Length: 103
Length: 224
Image (tube, rainbow over all chains, first blue to last red; front, side, top):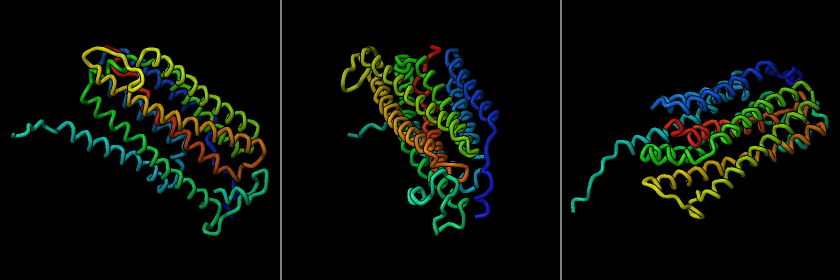
């Protein structure tokens, strides 16, 4: 119980506000870039911005930088399964060729 | 957690440790780990919808671009900003309660719940506009053009994704509102804030889901 009496770890207000500013700037970037014709890069920028925002939220707001390794592992696993789900499903649909019935 | 909640005295000055834990820190870490496992199931819950969306978009890129242009980008951007701000406010509220600043914590939590409620109201306006434009598959869908089936598919996914997300926002607003009342009554404090921290984790995840919803629903085909 000795650690119970310790003051809990806190993130500074300035850091939290800087992260909010960064998130809003990234939002402006994705909204602005969507209006410019960049071809496939529109999708790349959108996905990149979403991943960056997620990393910021998880690292600072969700305290992942201070979390134990086991907690970090649990937090990443959901995204790993999701990537496999989307990746494998997409692989199937993209590579499936149309085979007409022989009769 | 509820057993812990019932057995502690008011003002959140101490926390009782259940017998299976060595200390309060281990108890808190176990609760956080459990919450993350729950959040992983939530990620996969929405993940199935995102997987369907990805496959359909690969199969019907032009139809999805046309459908996305029917959505309200300005309102979608405002909703995203509202959720991002609310996420930072709940992070500030957790910080405040850790520092035993009860009054700022209550104000920040109420502001978070209000922003969540405003998100739902904005979404209601969106649904209303789409109803006026006859964009609700199965109820009132009157569109024409070469990609009409793909547009219908997009809006099916749109209502499933945003509908389930709104249900999560509503739950989050109720949970944070209830916890704000309990913080005001002095249930939580610097030694007892796990419930609040877990609710904040849930709210951040709701935010993260929307971070991915925003570009795939509102930003497709805008430059064309």
